[in-house]
Length: 338
Image (cartoon, rainbow, N blue to C red; front, side, top):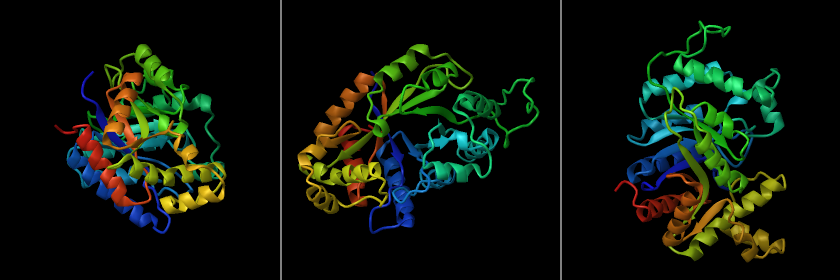
């Protein structure tokens, strides 16, 4: 297996006591760092109507990140296509590809990325697109991006501009196995988000690799896996920092969207609820936590189980310096850019 590549998915988390402007500034700062350290990709997430994440518009953040970096690929992780016109998405990403040639990724999902009311607001009077129509919506997008809509298509004469030969890399995002055939049958990349579902998606990834059919945008299968990662100088420090993420997730499950708490807040709240910290730290299905050696071993084992040569890391902390340090330690222990 070739050397393991590491990319980043950034949701622009908003710590308690901070604000969205600082969260987006942190995204730009961390993207510069990731570019210097040798990370492979920097994907911007799409979340709506939330106090926890400022990343609501990847199509806006992508050019901001690409403008302050030089080498790293930049893209969406992802665009939730059922909310939007495939034609408009094609034009947005054609423009991005024109501005930043050979650096743009278009990751696509079909999840709501927010509440049902947020989805209603995004559609603004339009009926929702039934899930069974998603493959056709995806085909239309791919057709406009590559100028491959068939003559029988009612909008075949409409062109997505600016026109050009190059198109973004196309990825299907998934947190279950339901879109394996959608990605494999159209020759798209496949990115499994274990950090969202906590589900072992190795069977889905291997099914995608087995069923892949070359298409106009990709001749061979390409898959990666999104996993939460929190690396610190010591295991004890990493576990302490991870309390923020564990409490945030527990709050979200209970319908409380208050931003990313500090470890101190998390410890106090867990103790008040009578939840042992050891029990909290035992939940590692979505995130790898530890010192550099522990994290390296866990990531290599994860990549081997999935049969992939790239992981997309998701690091959420209350403190920006802790996120920076996690990236630096990861780059060093995984020998990125060497």
